[in-house]
Image 1 (cartoon, one colour):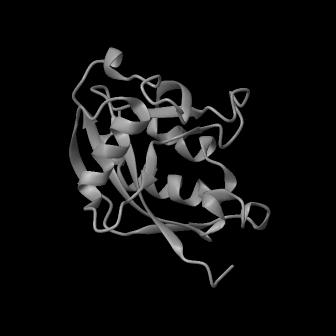
Image 2 (tube, helix red, strand yellow):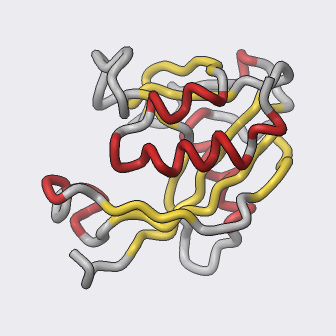
Length: 160
């Protein structure tokens, strides 16, 4: 496991006007209403030589159908997680031990109707909702929970 690299990734903590964050339900876990890991924040890979601040808008558009947002803050550190042993060799194309992520807090500047999960022919998410920032650690799958706790702390100043 230690010989595999981390995949470069960006993540978006997208705040609405009342300080709640967009969480989306993974399409591959449609019955995971309250299960940890069923709901997550938009995130995705960074292309070679792509600026993370540009990648986060591209990922928002790909995953939730809109990039109507403005950056409020960038997490000061890259955050990493390792995949659990049962996912090594299967998740992330089997080429990575986990992900190295640059996270951004963003303010949503659009309307709820702008969020369109159906624009991608292979959508990652099948539902979305606004949640309190403090809910993030409970929603996260075990191996991402520490990152979601860190995000809830680092970006608390933007929450309701």
